[in-house]
Length: 358
Image (tube, rainbow, N blue to C red; front, side):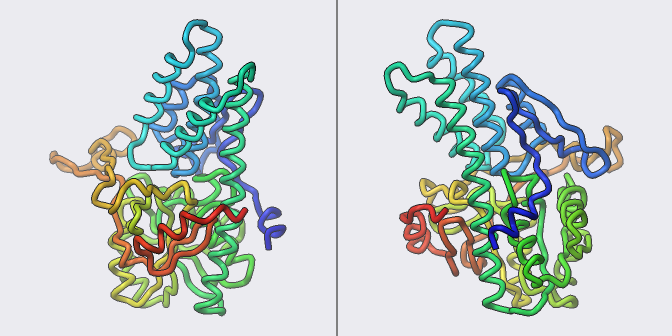
């Protein structure tokens, strides 16, 4: 299957070219495919904060490349580059608080600098580490896609209706996608009748990005408002809800795009299976439960305005970007290390003790 998945890779949002980072502006899709080129860590942090790039794995990869450019500037300036680079680490860490892949990638980059050998070029070493993080995510995507398809086939081998939330495809990762990667692979295996896509307010990642990716690959797709999910589960025979994650805690609780928690509750009521797909870099074993996850809140204007034009009443707005789905509502967590069904603390610890399979 891996060869078929590789052949199906058509979309990418991150490109590292001659020491500069190119990002596909996901705010402009699907009406415009606009690429921006960045050559400073401050600009990359801004791109992450302003959601030019989004999706937990893609944020981590972008931050890693941002540090490479930061180090290059620090070395050119002279002085204590290690001390100066701490400002760049901090700047990137503050760009988005919830997605743990960001902090995982920064830790990987820091640890590589700490392993420098005498005479080793720090810039060459750090760039190689960033490229490795990017390629590792791509390989993880392919492995997770295969695991997810096996899980779908095990429970129901016929073409079926799936539902997904937000965007977890090639646009959100370094490769094939996480949850959407599983869905794409299932389509290639003839296991998909239709994919129902939540529009995902307020940024509409589902309608702008996920539907665009699926339609571009010929996957049968139908867009729905977020609030139609329960009706779909009741009337359209949805067999799986498949979502990504921005952070998973030691007990298997999952932080993901706002609205994921309500989907899991609805799935439990309707007997629909619930799958979370994310690389092991998304798992934060330092947090015991989802109650400890910092939840990003963004400006109320995202709910009150469209293109800077206010359309809502003159009220305050509550705009959390993520919510936490308890582990007891999740049927399976799929990672590149393996699958955890009915996750709990013991199963998550066993998973994280394994070596990477890819």
